[in-house]
Structure formats: C-alpha cells, structure tokens
Image (cartoon, protein in one colour):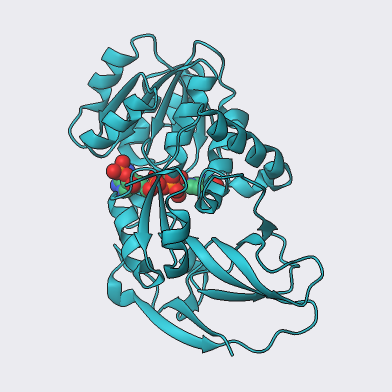
Length: 342
Ligand SMILES: NC(=O)c1ccc[n+]([C@@H]2O[C@H](COP(=O)([O-])OP(=O)(O)OC[C@H]3O[C@@H](n4cnc5c(N)ncnc54)[C@H](OP(=O)(O)O)[C@@H]3O)[C@@H](O)[C@H]2O)c1
C-alpha cells in the first residue's frame, strides 16, 4: 500500500499566510483500479494564485497546485511507468489518476532540460508570459514595454520575450540583486521598486512614454506606470500580488480619467483561456530555452515537507525566477541538469 503525504489548509488565510495555517497529513492510497495510474511528485509549484484561490474551498481542503510527477504503476494503456505528467493534483506526494482530468497532460519531450521547468517556463507561468504578453499587449518592434514583478516566474519571461520582439524593456523588482540579474537577461533598465521613485525612473528611462505594460502587481505601481503610457497603450492585467495579503480593500487613486484621456486598452486574463494553444506555446518556450534565447532560473526548495515555507518565501519575494519545490526523490537526480539555481 502507498502512503501519500499531503498538505491541507486548516482555515482560510487571514492576512499573510502562517506556518500554522497548514497541516501535513498522511493518506493510504487504495489499490489501482482498471484505467488508473499512480504517479509520484518530482517537482511541485508554489504560485501566488494559491493565496487567492484557496478562498473558494471549505476549510481543511488540500492546497491546490500543479506538479510534475512520474508514473510509477499503470493500469491505463495510455500511461507507461516512467512517463512524466503535469498534474493539477495539489500539494501531495502521490496521486491516483484515471487520466481523464482536462487540465492534466503529459510533459512534452524536453531533451536534457530539467522536468522542473514543467512547473515554470515550460508550464503555466510560461504560457502566462507567452500568451498574456503577445496576445494582449501586441508588442511592435521599437516600442517600450514595462514589466512589474519582473524577476519572477512570469515577469522574467515577459521581459525576455519583449526583447526577442525588439522592444525596449524596463523591469521593476524588489531587490538590487534581482535588478542586476534582469540586466544580465537583457532588460534595458531595471529598478528596485522599494527604493526607487517609479515616476522619476520612468521619466528618465522612458522619456518617449510606455506603449505596453505587463502588470503582475497592481496597486500604486500600476497606477504610476499607466500615467506614463502613450496614447493607445496596451495593458495586460496579469496579477495583483500587492493586494493578495491585504485584510482591507484598498481605495483609489482611480484611473478612469486616465484610461479615457490616453485611450488605453487594459485587459485582465486567466491563462487557461488559451489552453487549446498551449502545445504550441510550450514547444516555442522549449525551443527558445534550448537555443539560449530565453534564460531560466529556478529557486528550488528541497523537500515536500517544506512546501509551506517555499510558498510563504515566494510571497515575501525570496525567489528569483520560478519558485519550485523538489520532492526528496528528485533533488539529486534532476537539479544538475543545467538550469541555474538560486
Ligand atoms: N492571470 C493569470 O493567468 C496568471 C498566471 C500566473 C501568474 N499570475 C500572476 O502573475 C504574478 C506573478 O506570478 P509569478 O508566478 O510569476 O510569481 P513570482 O513573480 O515568481 O513570485 C511572486 C513575486 O511577487 C513579488 N511581490 C510580492 N509581494 C509584492 C508586492 N506587495 N508588490 C510587488 N511585488 C510583490 C515578489 O518579488 P519582488 O521581490 O519583486 O517583490 C515575489 O517574488 C502574480 O500576480 C500572479 O498572481 C497570473
């Protein structure tokens, strides 16, 4: 019998998550039925949306999340032991699946790239950057693009895709070290939003105005960038992480007049709207990474039991690049395969 470990959320989050919000449980998994397979987590993703999304579930629900897992046993003809799958099965070490869940899929062949990238650049965050930026911002060569949350999983890819589209790119991130890394990636300018006057930095770095804004953070950063946008600027509203841990709803300043006078187009999105096109996006990301045109970095926490710490660390900004947890069995085997570690 296989014993699975899983994390549940005891009560809805109240403000910034605490270690005591989470409970580690063990579960005996039943024997496989015809049509089912058993998979073991190799890498698990910790993402900002989890902070918001768990409010939809009753107390003591399993934490939601994506993982890259290896098929251990199978009574389903479409799944073979050893194959790698991307599962939406939450914070758990072992999963029994009937292979019918729409959002689950086989990890595309990636050669010698680490399968952990299935949680990041070759997974949901990568698709967020690829489709969210290209479809909603419609960047043109020579335009100026601003990215907030720029040194994270999504933002670091958006900036590099914008450079591939021959745009000028300005990124905002939370430490000087993150900004140095963004410049190594080819960002034209990178500013620490905690120590920089954003309006002043935009006057200096983008005197021509901003054409596209990929917004990962919302709040005053977004309002300030929007007030520096050119006529007919495009904004992809990807996330609002500056408010996720707030206990009170923030008020203004309001941006409606700005939207009218600059004739801006601002569109919120959830990456799953492009789900049918993901295979094309995943292959493009794999190609760019292999060609060295897109560089990836991961902040790897070792050990399933550290999921809460990895999640809270990501919300605090400890990650540069994608925050991912390596289950015990995968750390040694896969993390030497070429991606940069923090
Ligand atoms: N719409 C979609 O379908 C979709 C899909 C994926 C992600 N998202 C959103 O995209 C954004 C980035 O996600 P990600 O997965 O790439 O996460 P990430 O950027 O890798 O990690 C989160 C980062 O947010 C920053 N942060 C934390 N608190 C902040 C605050 N108060 N103000 C500004 N920045 C703050 C931290 O970096 P600093 O050190 O820079 O502060 C932290 O490293 C999130 O808002 C997420 O919800 C949306």
